[in-house]
Length: 120
Length: 108
Image (cartoon, rainbow over all chains, first blue to last red; front, side, top):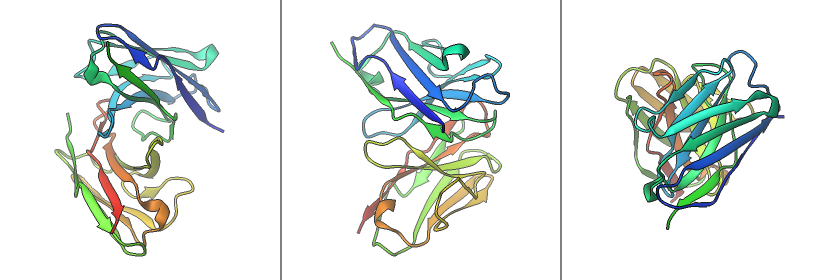
């Protein structure tokens, strides 16, 4: 049974760095083809893909946000970590992690999401 | 970046009726197109991938069609649990993955 769960702070101040952790089970990120992404959704708005890390530790970022994002994995802990620097109120959103099983594949499993509010 | 445009933004449908949702890509995405359903307070759920293949456990009333730049999600007979927001997503232009703006299916 595949599960993913996001964790991190619910509130961050402007200019701070956000660190989110995705803890997953039911699959291994060392399996060929496996990928974990981060996707966010501002309140009442659409989904936006942020970053992806694959089984081979290759990392990919949204063109518009790549200067602020870092994604990493700890295969032994079944975790993927996303950091986003210089947080702004427009970054207020629910942040999801999601799995895909190949390079060109949809997201078949999602975490329940974690709401991050950016406010002073 | 491939821009995904969904229409209409809101679709009002009576239970038991058919709903047809559209998704257009700014350039060809072949058949690398997925549809997701999202209910309030919940994560998206994969419905359709490869433009027309239902994901595991998805009822047969959901069907997808199209290729290239024009795609359709059809719900043949709307059930109460189908009222939700639906998103399309292209994964052809990997890894720059993009979603549409969503279509809200509401009760008429």
